[in-house]
Image (cartoon, rainbow over all chains, first blue to last red; front, side, top):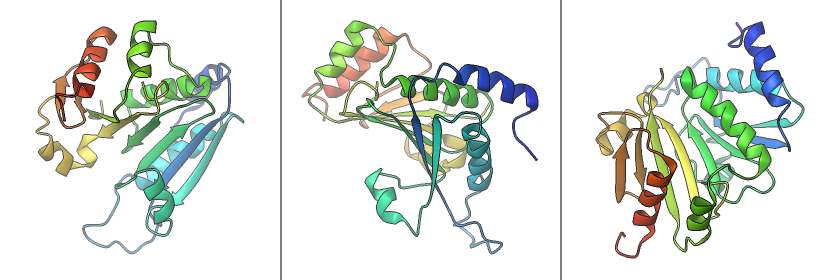
Length: 150
Length: 63
């Protein structure tokens, strides 16, 4: 079953016309197996992968890489991924790191699509003042925003 | 913000999927933002206010 209806797909395709550069989606999941190890199952890993595949199919500018969190732990470590499902969004010009943990559904899905558009530009639409503050940072900042599905 | 500075790692965390984090950060309302374990606030705030929180978290006093 598809997550995105025909209408959704058309709407997203229209938005993706604004993509200015290529966006890389680096997705970490677990091997999908019929065997479930209690305590280690990732409830939304498969659905998130399917959703991302549907999104990536809507534009040539979106490239999706799928990695196994366990088998490719080195790549996961490189991106600081300690839990799954996890998504890293990046593009040329992006200076820091932008990640999404969990399945982006409901309202968060539109946040994800908006983020992809911002990432593709390699710059934000923040005010000059805010950009100045960020430029002057001399300390690493880890900003975590906790959300729930709506 | 992560687009503009190599010092910034910005995460969105779907908290129902990671209940241990909900507990660790005492999440009772969303969106809740935590910066470097030192600064936190609940709700969507205007950009200028968010920037103030960033400054507070990056000041030498906050560590």
